[in-house]
Amino acid sequence: MRPVIFLMLLLSSASLGFASPLKDASPRGAFVGMQQGDFLKVYPFMQVRNFRHEGVNDWLTYNDPINDPFHKLVTFYFKDEKLVSWQFNDRPEVVKEYLGEFCFYQDPSLIYKAIQDVLQRMPYKDFLNATNRQRPMLFTEFYVDGTARFASSSEFIVTKDDPPCCTEGFTIVKLGMSLGLAKTPGPIEGVVAHEIAHRVLDSIRKGNVNCDAERAANRLIRKWGFKKEFKEASQLFGQKKGDPAGCQEVPHK
Image 1 (cartoon, rainbow, N blue to C red):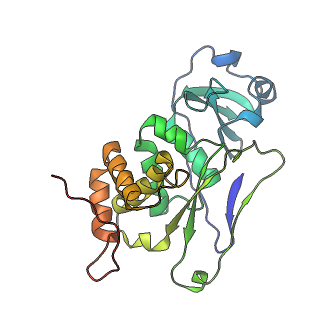
Image 2 (cartoon, rainbow, N blue to C red):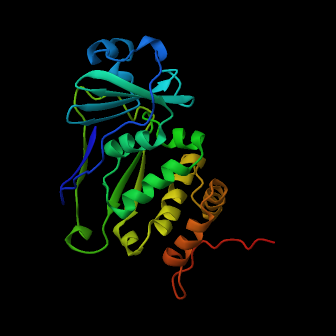
């Protein structure tokens, strides 16, 4: 699966490479030099969690164990269709793979970097929840100025060879282009973390679409370690004097 936007072409400049030294044997008997075709008999592609392809390089990430989306992850790196190395819980690589499929923003966008940082820093269990392929989060944009404010189109293209996703539904996170008013990723990270917190808390599915739900999301991101980013987001994007009444934080006693 890959996101396509019809307003502009966004090019990715992700670097190649892999992080870890190699052990003699991986889970389920994969080994260095193993042909990718033979590997896929052991680790079926239709059970992949995330993947990335660049030229002759492929990264394939699976749940470990393969049927447990909330345990741990293992990422395999292939070059010229031969297994080169693998690593457990390589979150930076998994985030890169995930955003390559489910995010319309691309590096070096400041908004992309904010999403990337939040996914890398949030607690591991909540990270697995938010990036579960069976119920992914889709990060897309919306416009408040220019001709695109009247109408725009975005589409996810799925091929017959893509592994299944969205069987448990999906979450759409719509990030306004006005977030670009920020000069650093911090305030944007506060906004992104807040929206991901709603997903982790299942606010919408539980029918919690009120000010209490907003405050609960704020408490969770502070617990995650985004206190500074929350404060920056509140200062830059929060309610200003004269704005219509909205949800207010309850002062701490």
